[in-house]
Image 1: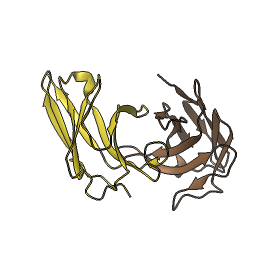
Image 2: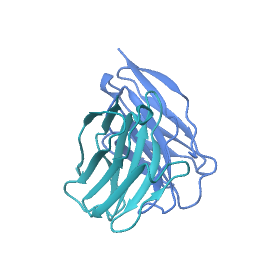
Image 3: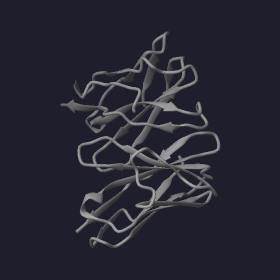
Image 4: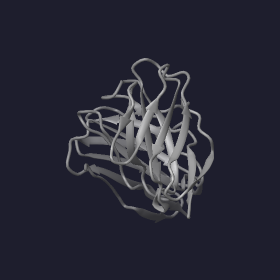
Length: 114
Length: 113
């Protein structure tokens, strides 16, 4: 089956630094990618939708200057958490949609901000 | 907001069928119902999806009521490895080729020996 890879799977950073998380579709072209965050014992919350070559669409309440999303190619989207603070510590998950509409999820990236 | 409501938790005996209900009374005509599950600290795993007909694959069966306001996911012979949080999701804004998945709270299924 199709594979979506996230990197890094775990990252620890100091408060005030920026962290980039990559999401790659390994064997298909992803016309659309989605970014979610998940706090412990909670459900996934959709942050934004990105289409290749265009600006991301952010869900209400998500700061676009805080969470920068780039979808530069049909196989790669990146999420950058800028000036990270401890409250940004979370599990970040991407999903990728193929041209036929199938949706595949990555394994997630756990961010810890000290 | 999520268009689905599910019971927060369920138990099932190993080897028995697990029937997970989901209500989606505000579903629109071209919106699909998807089921995913998530095992702790992993990404969600696709199970099955459907529009109005019942569907079956190697993992599960999906029964959708005629009025499409509710559905049931059936795991025919639950094993301990099926213990997970199961999410019923209505894909909004684009049918089956576009659209996004808005997750609700899911059902935490515990399969017991």
